[in-house]
Length: 332
Image (cartoon, rainbow, N blue to C red; front, top):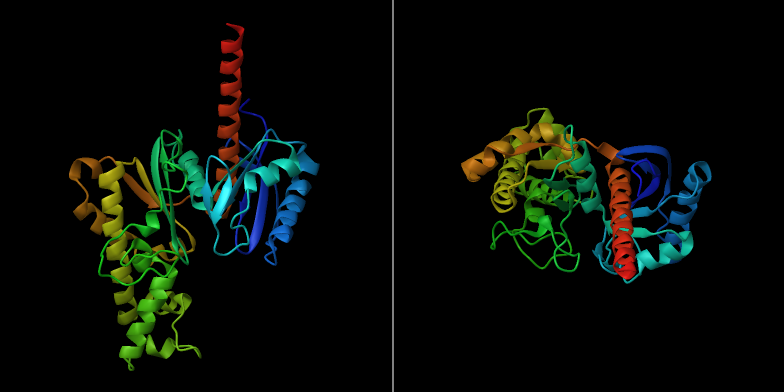
């Protein structure tokens, strides 16, 4: 497809649906609406309605890309599992193709965010990039050759569920493992560690942060850590060290040009980022470490829409190339 053709990027989150017209890596005419969570039909109707508002302004897109917080079977566009939104078992690509009558491409939202970051790192898109999204859980995406790496069936690159300690704490997410990255470097893990510390140390600053449910919130940990509370800083020390262990391992496996840290917890990066990078440096193979840049994400809240748009543009370009090749082969 032409580089100046408009595609739509749709980012479906647990609280909002964001849709924008995307040209290259630029978003225009963005619309947002609350995510309907009552049932699947309401969610699909909400996605369509938000997208229609953009289409009314920019015209029919060449293709549509959709990022959702779900496991996607890439070949079929079927949602294998979806924890926070009602899409499990939904043939999402086929359903949206029927509604919009243009090619639709569907992927995990963290994959889309990584694809966006690969467009934003420097003067030229990154060929090999790894992104970790630190939020309630830990997501991730791997870009190889400028495109998303998904594994054999589109379900791979679950970076948050790579095990760091087989005897570690249970994963707080939808994972049977123990001691995985999400068990140490997620918002849920941060709150768990702070709460355990507060209950064990009644005279600590963290104990003063226990809420009526007997838990310490992530916001409270961040707040008192920034005020210099030694116990909260100790919780972040563990968080940072384990994140660094993970980053060092990923560098050794993938040899990326870039490692990017995003997600909601990246807003508290002043409490852990430098320590995590130091730990990763001490564990990665030196020849690989010299060639990698570790940074915070640049796309911000718009990364999901950008990445979904790039997903659509790449998918449409592949389809065009395939049809052209088939036409040439048929003519011969």
